[in-house]
Structures are given as C-alpha cells and as structure tokens.
Length: 576
Ligand code: ISL
Image (tube, rainbow, N blue to C red; front, top):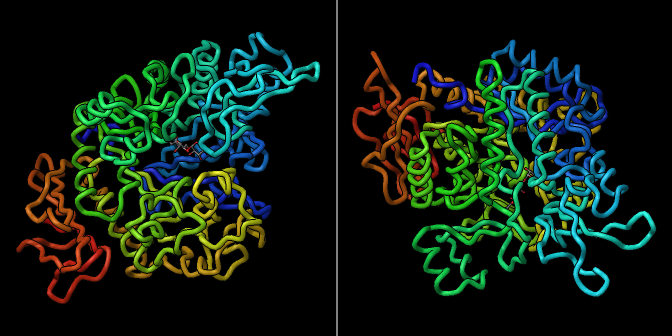
C-alpha cells in the first residue's frame, strides 16, 4: 500500500461554493473566498476538496442546472479565479475534484435553446428527450414518470407557430431537461468537457446522478417508487405491483425493483469511455466518483471497476438509523461487494442534499426516513445528535477506504431547522411528497468568526440564507485550539488516520462487536510496522463497554468513564 494511488484512502472535503466563504460581500460565497481560506483545510488535514457546481447557471437548482460547462458563473468569479484556486490548492498539497452534471443541462443552455427553436424532428431536439404527447391532441405526457422533485417528469413546449407541441423529459426540475445519452453528440461533448477541466488541472470529477443518464428503451410507464429499494426494504413489495415470481426473484437475488430511469446497463459504457479519457491524461491519476443512489450494494459496486469509476458513495451508511446491527450489516456488505472489484469503500455521512448528521442522529430513530426532516416532524435533539455524530464520524474515519466530509460537519454544525419559508430557495421545497421542507437547512453559510458580520462568512452582513443565531457558538474561532471541540477532534482524527494510514488498512470484526457494539480492528501496519492494529469501537447501547485489557486509547469522541469504560453513544480509537 505504500504506493497506493492518492484517492484510495483520501479524505475529501466537500465545499458548497455558495456557502463557504464570500470575498466580495454580496452574501454568496465565491471562488476567491475559497482560495483565501484553503490554508484552513490544509491545517484540518484533508487530502482534497470537492466543489459543488460553480458553472454558469440560472441557479434554479443552486448550480446543478448548468448553462455553460466551460465557464464560471459571475456570482462565483471567473476562469482565472478557478485557475488560481486550483494552483493554490495544489501548492498546499490539496487535490481538487469538481462536480460534473451530465444527466441534464439547464433549460438556458445553448443546446436547449436551439432545440426549442429548431422544432420537432430536428437534430437539435435529438440531444434531449423530446416526445409527442399521448391522447387526442397530445395533451397527455408521453409516459407517467414523475419528477424526483415532485410533479410530472415532462413539460410541454409551445412550438414556433404558437401551438402546444412536444414534451421534454426532466427527471428533476422543469428547468433541467435530461440529455439523450443514446445520441453520440452528447457523449462527444462530455468527453470534451472532461478534457477541458483536466487541462485546467483538476484531479477528478464527482458525477451527479451517475445512475440516471440512460433510460430504459421505449420509456415504459412505471408504477413504483422513484428511489431504488433493496429486498430488505419491506416497502419494496408493498409499494410495487410485483407478481409472486418477481417477488421471489427479488428475495433470491437481493436485487430490488429497478425503475426504468435508474441504473440501466448502458451507463457503464459511458463511464468506460470517461475512464479512458482520464487515463490518457498525465499523472497524477484523476478520479471519477459516482453519486449513484443504487441498491443493493452489489449493483453499486458495478460502477467501481478498474475501467470505470474509482469511487461510488456508499449511501447506505448515510441512510442508516443509529442501530448497531444495521451498521455492521452495511459495513460487512460494503467491504464484501467492493472486495469483489478490488475497490475501497467511499464513506460519507453528510452532503448538501441531506439533513446534517449532527441533527439527523438527534431525530427520533423510529422514523422511517431519518435522512429527511418533514415540516411536520419534531425538532432534533441537538445535544444527542452531536454526541452521536462525533461517534459516527469516528467510526467512518476509522474504517479503511476514502471518506467525504461536508463543510461545517467538522464544527458539529446542526441543520437549520427553523428557517422561515420566505428564505427557502430549494426547488424541492413544498414540492416533494410528505411535506419535505427542502434542502436549504444544510446549505447555510459557514460560521468562521463569532463576533463578525455574517459570522465571518464575508465582509458584509449579507448571507443568501439566514444563519441561525446558534451558529455563532459553532464558529471556527470558538473551537480552534479548544480541547474537546469538534474541530479539534476532527483535526486529531485526521492526523492519527494519516500517520497510521488507517484508510489503507484492512478491517475485521473484534470480539466485542455484537449487540449494541460496533467494533472493528483496523490492521494498517506493513513492513516494520506490521502488527499495528487500531480498535475502532462505538457503543450504541445503554450500558458502558469495557475495553480489552492492554488497549491504549488514542482518541475518544466524548469523555470516557472513570474506569476507562466507553459510555453510551461514544466511540474510541484504541491501539491493541
Ligand atoms: O435519484 C434519487 C433517488 O433515487 C435522488 O436521490 C437523486 O439521486 C439525487 O437527488 C441527485 O442529487 C444530485 O442531483 C440533483 C441535485 O439537485 C442535487 O443537489 C445533486 O446532489 C439534480 O442535479
């Protein structure tokens, strides 16, 4: 492992550019703001950054609606600003991963505008999924697919002569038309976009909705849920009109019902082509990381191959309740499936789409979906959530593989749960079924300095989303150098992890694992260090847990008992 490629054990810090650092006081974060604050990340001890989209965009989905893949939105800066960010990061020893959004463009992309103008049957329309409607005058959408964001997955256009015309498919917002990936022009364009950013020095791409690019031929109707489910989900069968035979097959293969818009075989051809584009670049190796909400794990692992993606987020870990048995199951399955393909697992607990784990883990764990806070659900318990979040992160960073950390989680930042509706900007707000309150609560600008305008986010008071009053206490300057703070805990974890090369170790269950305890032995030593073993233990139960004799505690997520026992909701790293 001494010569392992950089990404195998990398800790990659996700920056949400709107909300990390604002250099000009307009209340929206920007690239120069990020560049100026990069030394903070070097000191934190991460290996790389991933930047959510910064491309030209009308911002109907916070930049995941791209109008020009080869330029920077003026609100974030310019191409020279991006160049400066990349070279400063490299000087500091940080790699740079950018976001690629290949499932759809913005409806303001030149291609889509041309498609609207050119009319039915044109080559321009052929880059997107335009179809005639059903019914007498084509007034019904071509099929019954809904949008992930709520409402119909199709929008009808008005043709040049003023009459209602064709419909276009959008799996997300109506301003995000899906590309037709069976059209070779689309493939060529994205190969060229990859080359463009490689030439500017980026070290990799996080691929948005990687499981969605190819749709089942014929676009058949679909009557199931929009998420992929695995056989373990009792809702899988309940939600679907599957016959007995299909139901038996699901149980046998562990393969859940697959909606026609996700995880189709054809996506793998796309990633093989991209891998060859990246492999043709000069060293160091550049990576592809799949954002693919694919179940079960055996199907997700198919994205991570030596001729496809390097990484794929393990969302099962993120989606798991605070439940020891389920955590063990997710860890076991993930290692097993990734071992088949010789790949490391890519762990993640928070990102810009889910409730921050410091709040999520403080929610009622008997709720079916702890990763979303519905408007009608109770407020999370902040103290409990933070305690568990610190323990969960200690588990994650103690496991072999790569880990992604979302901005602010190193401060123990909670979700903003009481944002007044008039501030909310996420297109999923009020549109998703079940009265979801949208994703703005995890996207609030970072607190850097307690006693400064916008908590040090920028030079003015302006912030594009309001910062809760409680955020002041979480500011970087309140935690730096403070023993036991979440920021110092992250710094310590990252430094021990790096020194011990925990990310490259191998994991086995320790005898203490079972019941309410998750206990992994991470054997990371090689050569003269052979035999170096770290016990990574989390206690999710009510009773304190005694460590094995001779175990030497290196770090703990909270205070240990007077007798050295590990209390409820606390994790430790201990040398064996
Ligand atoms: O497809 C899903 C469920 O099966 C969704 O979870 C989906 O994968 C997810 O919403 C994709 O998110 C990404 O693409 C969206 C954007 O709004 C998110 O911010 C981004 O992370 C559309 O580009």
